[in-house]
Amino acid sequence: RQVKEFGCQAFAILFDDIDHTMCPADKEAFSSFAHAQVSVTNEIYRYLGEPPVFLFCPTEYCSSLCHPSLKASNYLKVIGADLHPGIGVIWTGSTVISKEISVESVADVQEVVRRRPLIWDNLHANDYA
Image (tube, rainbow, N blue to C red; front, side, top):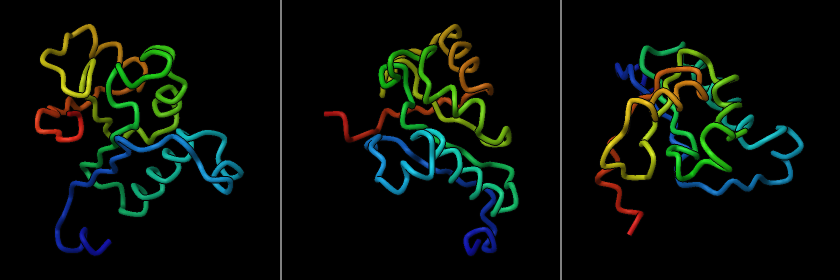
């Protein structure tokens, strides 16, 4: 809340590029990795008073990271179903750095996460070399 009290009105929780493994305590508390992330994110969003800009970067933030695929990803289906509707979802397209993103692919991710994604131009990522 300190940052909010300084006037910050935009926040993001970034779960990109992390391991999917949960510790034993988290496995007992949450039914899945996605449920754990959604729970934490929703709680922080509410704690901050539902700020006007609040973004969530999923661990599966592009099609190439989706398991087994974008449309069949149980992880993203949970995000779409349970993430508070006021929270935006970040997406980079078909790959970590996408040169092009088709209208059809945006429609596909929108269908799964149940909201229009915020397109993230990840051009300056330095962790893909």
